[in-house]
Amino acid sequence: MRKLVAVLLVVLAVFAFGAQKLYVSTWGFNLDLLDKNITKPFFEKYGIQIERELGNNSVRLSKLISQKDNPVIDVVHFADYYAMLAVKNGLLQPIDVTKLSNYQDLYDFAKDPVGGHYGIGYTVYSMGIVYRTDKIKQPITSWKDFWSKEVAGHISLPDITTTQGPVLMMHLNKIFANDAYDPELKAAFEKIAELKKDVVTFYKTSSELINLFKMGEVWMAPVTRFSWGQFLATGLPLAWVVPEEGMLGFTNVVSIVKGAKNLDAAYKYIDFIISYEVQLAEAMDLVDSPVNIKVKVPPEIAEKLTYGEDHIKSLVFYDIGFIVENYDKWINKWNEMIAQ
Image 1 (tube, one colour):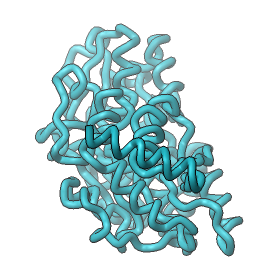
Image 2: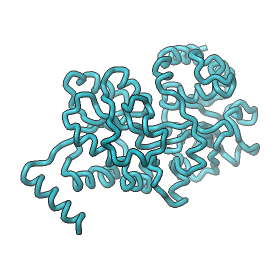
Image 3: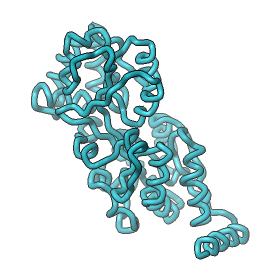
Image 4: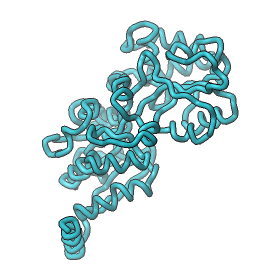
């Protein structure tokens, strides 16, 4: 009854004064489910209409840069790396976490993933190893298994231009030289140069990788957990591996644009999407893996998400700022290596 009354009050306010709008920059995925789980209930609760600007990270970052002196966007969703680039370009403002009632319910890694409270992690995903159990008989247990003769000619790795590529290179440098923060990533580049003749392709999208598995060209690859459900849907005999050196952890973050014109609504929105109710709804619909520690999901859902105490504990996170500092140099080094 109270909820119905609250909704009626919101409707009356909107009818009398018109709907307030919040301008949100985000990706164009799962829009129907985002409307179901976020847009509609957010409007019902606050009478605030969400207007979206859609596109990939780089396109939307470029738009924010072009609008820097007079921003249109209030809230932006980015992969953690691009959030750091936005900070570097002076596009974001620190978030006052005391205004977020659900902040303390987040995993620690989600509370300040880019530093300075310039972003709040609202979803997490992992990268582990997936392999064909009918093609590879020796159990895969380590990232070092990509250098095994048994899989030579049937592996794929992410291109360094992907969100996961630089982090994987840092992890390999940690594994082979015990130094993830070598600015040159010397050991990782040497090992990839040694391996490249056995790599079918350095993939750039999950869909590209799934097709390579379907065609039987690739038997093993690093795979992001958010695409694991699509891999399972192929019907292939596949196994997900938590390598002994750990899985890689990534967060997508939500931030407030510097100079946002609808600041109060922006805080309401951020608090809303990290709430138990929204995090649960998004998890159950397999849109995003939850970072709210109160969320519990059944096993059949959990197996397709980055979820569960053991899974979360296995995640390895690296400093995104270090990637931003060295990214251009690594790209050039990568291109030279591939061309040789």
